[in-house]
Length: 192
Image (cartoon, rainbow, N blue to C red; front, side, top):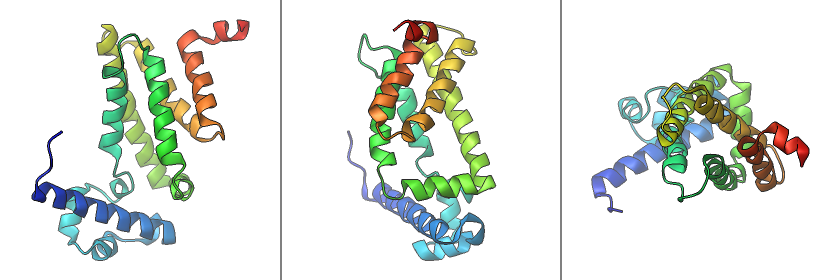
């Protein structure tokens, strides 16, 4: 991996500073009661700089959007030889659950999104985009057409499983059971 130059590191630091300021203010006062100028001031940047890093106020809260989509697609494309797609996705979500769901701000973040219609809509649009990218990666991997309904279904079920997994105390067990169901199907699961 190549080391980033100073300019790139500075851009990443600025972006992170803006995202951190936004999260802090949104959690303290609510999404609708915070303006972008206030966020920019807290991050010590101009509003123009804020919008160079984030295209909208909503995107300030979902600053890991591109990385999340890339990791989902990578879970399919970069999985070990012989590992099934459902198993690769299970492993991905177990790692994600450990990293995100255990963070002390995860619960307040989820409540903020759920309690704010604008953020719920933005998140849904983001997940639809991720679902499409994941479905295409699955289709490419198995040699199916990009609009294959089975690939789209697997992508949808995998992304919906994430919420179920994150809501369980034993996330690894929940992931194992849900992705086992995706791997083997309901009828096979009922015979066990």
